[in-house]
Image (cartoon, rainbow, N blue to C red):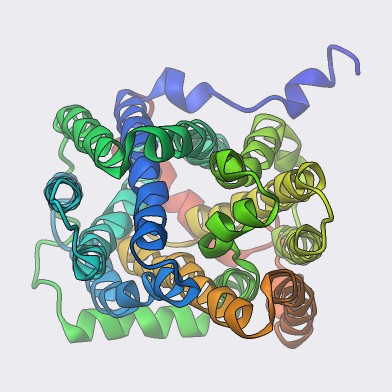
Length: 430
């Protein structure tokens, strides 16, 4: 590799240098996400310890589906009408309370399984109300030509948090108990809230009316009119429903006789995520974003199938890392389509729909892999899901030509958003 080639591969960090608000969002997200990984690992581990059941662990995610559907769409409408900064801080505070409740339950002599379900639904509500505002605020903090770098940085934040968070959480939760893991999450929320309070308020997005069913329906109509957008949501949902194996990781670790490897299993996909993010400079030279999404999501399914069939732990971790890399490539191009082509006044509602694909898919996927593992075996459940994922993504691409043919250079939606943002002083570098 020559010196001239290196900048094309390295991640673009200019959004961090140029925007104070983006730095605050990024930093708060790093702390909050890192802490949340402790709860992410602790909840299924505690459920396994209390029940030893595939089904109970898998069903933990199902209680989150209804709150995500209702409050994800509603949260999108809120983001397009209320002060996004206030919504983010309020929801972050609600999530902190959820972690406190889990900590209190874990400290009981006999922790209640039902608390895991109840708090899971409450936490999903808080995240559903927050995520649309958070996603919609990012394009307001950086210039339009730096959105690719911002997307890669936000993705790197998640993958790095997953790597370190799950790896350390697996050790902490298994060695010192789930209560300690929940306590770490509580502390992380205190720090992230302090950082978020420093964000500059941009006021209400709309001075007229408020969130309503009509406003939500308007967003749904816009999404339906954009089959390329629908394709990005559908590909992500399909991949997660069919090929998301995280719920059975405690049982995979047990299968290989390596309970100490639980954190490694959670962290392996994020290692691939991080490598893809750190070398994401090449993505700026790809113009057919839809094709990149389809290819990456198909490769993700193949990697998951290979993970399910792996005879050794080392090989399983390798294929998980590969799956994470392809998942990140798909995510980067999905975020580019969303951030570059959706008008700011609709961005919250589209982020709400985006959240449905991002959040519901894994929950249904966890239930699918757990139930089939109970009936047909662990390896079969994972491998068949990966194969079906690849087949389904190819079928979706064939049925949605606007996704396959999407080109950022010729998209009228991208051109309109670029013109609008160039004339808005709030997108200038700060």
